[in-house]
Length: 395
Image 1 (tube, rainbow, N blue to C red):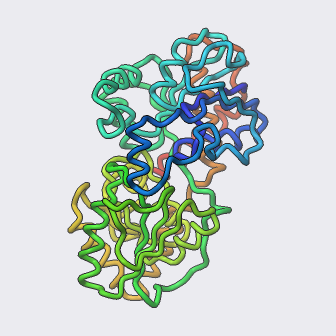
Image 2 (cartoon, rainbow, N blue to C red):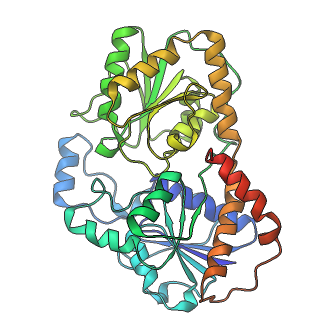
Image 3 (tube, one colour):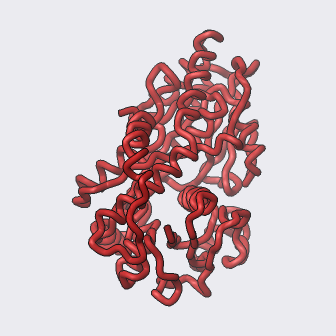
């Protein structure tokens, strides 16, 4: 297939990382892949002043930011500035994939020769926490555009069907880079250790996690906390004293951080499919999380971790204490179960499922730009992969 991905921006966000992985792996499977996107826009005066107030300075020049696409062997095209994609920016293709509600608007306006139009939905893109009030109605309308839908979790599948009237939704769960995230079997740390992803985005719920950690610390005074994030902690949301924090660490350092933990904690309020908990599970760490996309798809209470209600810091703390205080044998069972969960669905599986999802989107479309008849593999392995998807989602 000739596949074009349209990104709103080339950056280090989790959504771009997933697109980058699929682009690379589809390219390696022989497809003609192009990724098109915009440079980061210049921050507003308010954003720059806020950055200075938090001690971060003005930040890097917007066109020089790092991106998950930087090291990939995939053709890509960075537009001259932040603007809507036009037909002249893209080659004719079999399928063109929007990756955010704004790009869905751009893709919807393209002529048929640019490919069958697909919206790859990785979050509740109309959620109030992401957008200004003036944008919410527009984003909701974009989610209802007549583009084929591919998404990544059960919660997003429900959201697309119930809130936006989608019917044919393809669900392809995310996977972990197992060549990057792995660990040998081990026991608990000598000092109880909890890890978390740091962000001052309210949707990430770090304030919830910090309240939980305060309660854990009261029960276990020798608690060690480790964390990483894309920027240093801000004064309004400080990490506990003595926390080991890594700013923008390389992947091998993240792997070591995961492997140093007895529990990975997530207090998020909204996630499409939160990957760090699954990466931690690949490194044999039980997860205690709020019930958000990703953990909700992978965590089984009492087996590889625990799920609690969103905003419930007390339950988050209680379940974390329970895992930290578990017997060495029980903790090892949970650790091994976490690893089995993370390794049961690989990026090779996910890429094959994504490839077939694109094929099915094309087959269902009345417009098939350059598409050839579906190869035999669509019918030959679709059933097998459908069963693997259902198993990965715990269905």
